[in-house]
Each structure stands twice: as structure tokens, then as C-alpha cells.
Image (cartoon, rainbow, N blue to C red; front, side, top):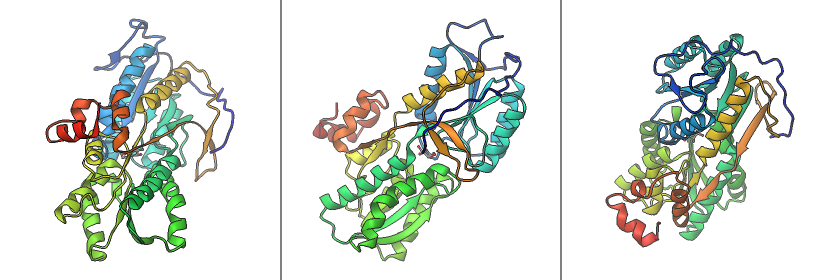
Length: 365
Ligand code: BGC
């Protein structure tokens, strides 16, 4: 990450306000002034790899666009790369002024960004950097910091359980997601020194293709078999993967004894933390991410530039992409009330059914 200024005076704009597509959502005071109102297209990746996309990002993006008074169209590619491209093409045809994508992989992401650019549509990488891509801005969290919090969390939970010489396994995120590499750099920076000092033993390391939770369970089953059940701690790259690992630990009556990390602070992740089956999760204030992305999307649609004060280096091209990177926060059992207070999840979602008593015992407000 490097400091830098940005300008992109050459950003072309699609001739103001294309025809409004069916299902266009119009919000705010500019209603009726469609010729000059920016129209933001957003493509979310799927609704299975994490609860966040439909549970948090959609809601917070809608709120931000409505507050800004711009037209928007948010769609979900449901993990289908050709669908992703079709949606992008339709959005461009329907006159979006800014296209914001969460790529499914950098190859298809780049094709979409290049196409948009060639049509004079401004582009933003939302949450995932498109490696080799051409987005004008990147809005995300400091993903290496997320990984560090996971590594530190695992160390803390293993110490609390008094595990000596633990064997630690990894379930990394999707190999096609640049965030997964950044997360790994983060947790490696904490754990590799422990492996080197022979304080910890490195167990099996696997990546979870497309962050697929079902595959994650199979992968972890294999890791357990491979090690004769000798795994003492698990780095799981997000809450969905963590939940898959926990389901396998439950089958083997090992849940609660083997700490597992996560990220996203989704309701299920928070319940797993509450139950003591998950060591920690990481809260990322998606409302702030959505607001930052919305501000930039509106600015670029109006042909303006913004100095984000930060850049991220594209590992393939070496380009310094102007970026907004927000700070993540570790969440342990005692922090769950803060995530509720931030209106990220509701108390009812976390404290439902069998979790009501656990919430009361943990003083979750
Ligand atoms: C996001 C995570 C999410 C994962 C799976 C990553 O790129 O940063 O928040 O859990 O994708 O969707």
C-alpha cells in the first residue's frame, strides 16, 4: 500500500443518462432529472460464499445511493461468470454512468472493466481488486490487516486453551480472489514465525475454490483424516468456511476444543463465536465501505476526481490503483454487542432460538 495522488482527467462519460431500464430504482431528490442523474450499476458475486453480499452490501449500497439521490441497479451474478458478463453488458447498454464490480475472478473482471471503459463508463473495483484490471478506484478493507487479526486471534484462543505445540491447518479463500492472498500474507506474518521457532507445527494447507462452503467441509474432513485427527487450530478465511469446518468438528465431537477463525461477522459466525465453537470473527463496517464506494461512484459519474490518499499496487501490472481501505476489527464473545450496536446485525438475528440463553449469559445487548 502506498500513498499517492490521483487524477483521471481522461475519464469519459457515457452521454448523460441512457434510457432507464425496467426495474431501475430511483431514489432521492434528483428524481425526474434523469438526464443529469448518475446511474450506478453494481454486480455482486454470489449469495453463497458469504452472507454479506445479500445480507449487508446490498442494503448498505441501496441506502447510500438513495441518500445520494442517484439511480442504481444492483444485480447478483450468483457465481456464474458468463452471467456476470451478460449483466455487465446489459448495464452498459442500459446507460449506467458508473459500473462497480465484485469480480468472480480477475480474467472475467478485467474483460468487463475493459468493455465498460471502452464505452466511456467509469469503473470501480468493490471489495476485490481485479488483478491486471483497469478500474479507476478500489474500495475495500485492509485485507492484510484482516488476516493479521485472524492470526492473532488463533494465537490468543490457542493460548487460552493452554494448547502446547499446536498443529495449525489453513483453509484459505478462493485462489482466484486477490483478497485471499492478502489475507494469507496477514495470518502468515503472525504464524510463520511460530512455525519457524517450532512453537507451532504447520498442518495441511488448502485453498477453498470459489470460497465454496460445501467444498470447505470436504477439504477439512480430508485434513482431519490426513493428520489422524491431530489438528489443534484452524485458520478459516471467512465465517462460511469456518461454519463448514465447525460442522465437521461437531461430527467428530471436537467443536469448542479446536479454535477456528473467520471473518464477516455474519449472524451465523457470531452465533458460532457465542457458542464457543468459533474463536473469533472480523467485523468489517460494510456500511462505510458502501458509502465510500457510493461517493466515488457519484463523483466519477460526474467526471470528478477524488484524492483517496492511498493506493494499492496491482501485483500483475505494478499499477498503483487509487484506493480507499477501511480498518477491520476483531470480534470475540465480548464484542458481539458492539456489532449489534453498529446496526450491522440485529440482536434478534443473533439471539434466536437456542442462542437466546447464550446471549443472556454473555450479556449480549
Ligand atoms: C470478501 C469476504 C467474503 C469472501 C467470500 C472476499 O473477497 O472480502 O468478505 O467473505 O470474499 O465471498
